[in-house]
Image (cartoon, rainbow, N blue to C red; front, side, top):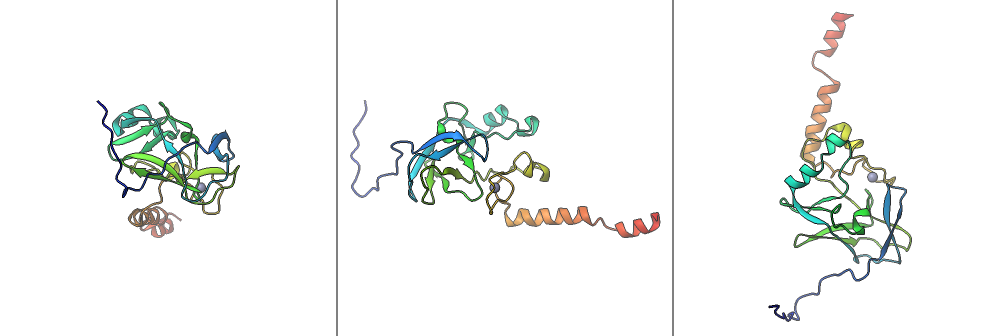
Length: 194
Ligand SMILES: [Zn+2]
């Protein structure tokens, strides 16, 4: 039997999406995108990312980025245990595109994913958020800019929808690049061959 719960006055009412404030149309960034149907203010909750909740193992089994040379656009990693697959029972939120200079952000609250505006958005503007795809370490340098390449076209574009590299990852990558470009004894070897 359902029990009635009275909300204590001290609890701040959660942000809710009453009416979806965007429409889905063809986007210059990629495929389709979500466009503000009215002016939206900073801090407004514009959407909830819905879809089937599955484990990472199930999501990985469903989609193999490397094999299909396509990144799985409709997956959202919520926690270490859970991924939302918006290809199954998803809503229009799955059409929101990535941008490196986004006007919205994804917020995780009690393992639900919401999209909140981080700027004032004018009616007609495309809604975007930074996908910041989690890296599993299997991404190659090339894939970073091809398979996971970004075409947001903003001045702040980092070229990829993968999450920015951490300082430790950057250091590792720089060291690897140095090794590739300056193999030890390369000069000596060239001299002998010449
Ligand atoms: Zn970009």
